[in-house]
Image 1 (cartoon, rainbow, N blue to C red):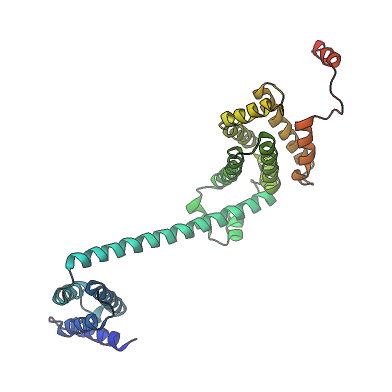
Image 2 (cartoon, rainbow, N blue to C red):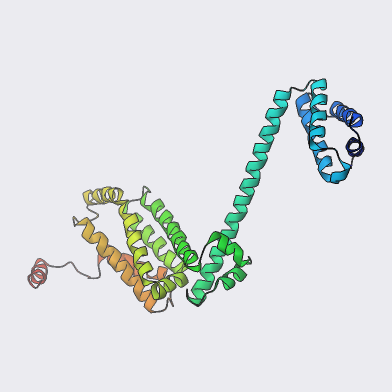
Length: 313
């Protein structure tokens, strides 16, 4: 503690025992005069902050009331030429900034805690399944109390569904970035397939739980994802029209191709799931890309073959 602060603490104690805080008045005036800087309001505020800090450290029975401290400071500030209006504005600004900082700190900590809970929940759900997983295990894995989990998620069902939705939004954000890019349509499709397959590789445990224990949720997820991609249809169609003009793509029905491609992709994912995800789904990309872009027949189909196939339908 500095000599000035020692004097301030002593003056505050004396003011707590007296109706006339002369020593507090004197020490405040002295400290403002000794403070560095030409801005008298700034010097006065620094001294007031120091006085308030010392006041807070004293036992309640040994210090003056807060109103005595404030009244004494106002009188001294006026004597040294500090504008009360300016002092009030600066004090309120400091309070607002402090409150915003504390709120941001609390929000940041709450966000980090929620992310830890979600990561722990994904591990536990993936290892034990939804029905066998318990909130106690998730709390232990996240290193938080069970009550903390319930403050963020009202039930295990809510935690699971929010986890799925959050992971889906992550995939959606990656897909939107690609679909909104300036890439040509083939590069766009290839990148899209890569992030799509990588998503299932990364979240395979969670996806298996969805399929085995919440098949309705898996269906809704696929429908929802297709719906979100469909929102980018105008941009996709423009890209496809450009590719047709450059004779990169054939002139075929867009919606038939789109839904056929999505069906093919999900067929590949279902086969991977049936094999218990024992291989990387991303490793299937070269085959999937070749089939989608070039088919799996080595020679062009003749007109006679096309007519023969059409006649049998």
